[in-house]
Length: 414
Image 1 (cartoon, helix red, strand yellow):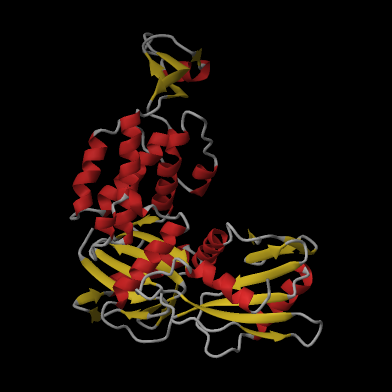
Image 2 (cartoon, rainbow, N blue to C red):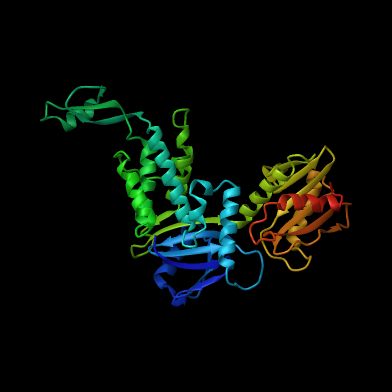
């Protein structure tokens, strides 16, 4: 992977024609990102005059030899020395804890290097998974093939045989079964290997990728889309392929070769921080309540109107009576004045789930006391809780679940 890196935080803006720490962001990069955004319904960025304003999506984008890292940030303060590294590690740890990334499969020593990017981590994880499959033995599968052969086997396709072999009497056009390694699973893995080979040229991963490819069987090319992966059915024999296929899906579906009028190769690995924050809090709350009398439920849906449903992020239950609805919001809020829409949403959650209290949970750089206020009618309340994302050592707080439960218990909501 190229060594040109631009690091930005969510909601920041890049303007083409400018240098960012000696790295140039050009109009070609801008055009490629603009077309990528169109492919994804304009959800990743906002296009400005000569600029791209990032949204709540964080991660990494590779355009030829330029890497753009988009990092989360939980406060309004400017960027100080070392902060980029801190929030990069926060992102990696959140992905690891929510099982979107297995850092331990890559090696913590590599992760700690500042020149290792998120794509590197996923690429190396994928290469290790393929190497593991190779050591275990790649599976063979039966599949049907229709073509000319020199011996009669399988089913003779009369129409095709007459059309193709009117002169060549020694050939047979048949549909027959083949049992080998040239099947869909290996074709998908091979496509992901080709993408990694193209993207990682010039990096330490290129040689490793070529080594894996040398030991990989020759297979047919394949065109993949989302439906290709949805139709895959794994059995007991192919179950070990599950992780490699999931990473391959991530790589293949986010790869956009020749997206602009030039020949830029692009791969974007982006995550919605709203979803990531929600999943991280859910995991931490479940961990904190293992030995407590609380049940943590994520994304419970209820019918709301016709076929429409409503679904709070997290529901905390104690027995059949005590319930707290938690709605996570990855956004910055000054004071204790949530938006009217958020308050209306909490009001409906309380009514629908028969909850006494709902909580809006925000990230912050310091923990603040839980603030709660009752709705005028009926008698239930909405609270605001801001939790420090970092612990005292400046790393992602692994005890945030315990601190949230403690805040609820101090207010006697539970």
